[in-house]
Length: 198
Image (cartoon, rainbow, N blue to C red):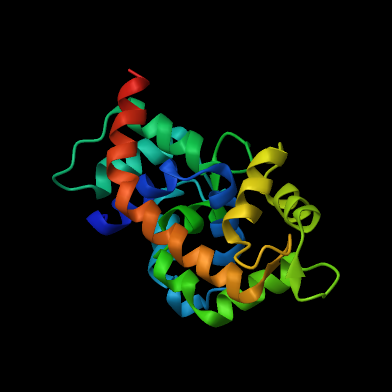
């Protein structure tokens, strides 16, 4: 099964995202319907050759080389992809991490997906997200957390009306802006970051 260049591009885009954005994509991707990620599920199975539910460095290397017809991928790029897609820091890529790293971000902009993610983060059901709620949600996904300053900056960027919290409309607007910005800058960032590893 050839690896669609679009899927490889998505992996590279994911690698350039901030830790906070990766955690948000990881959390939101859980709300996609099975039919929306069926192809990605099959791709994961083709990489996970020993069927242990995770993709190791060797499996990622072999899978990328086998499925990436016409694209040259260096060992440094493979290690970089593994390191950046491994959100939980386990040393490999599990199914949920793989889906997050390869999903079409436009699917995550759907109202129902964003609403479910917002509700998950809104622990007190107030209809708004506080800094503390966002930090708690991130801590559930990213073991070493995200810096408090990054969360404050996220809230400042999203808080259009200046009330110190994020309502659903502000959340949606920021999510869409961030997705479009990540796509626009990802290829350039990936080349710069992976080149600096050499």
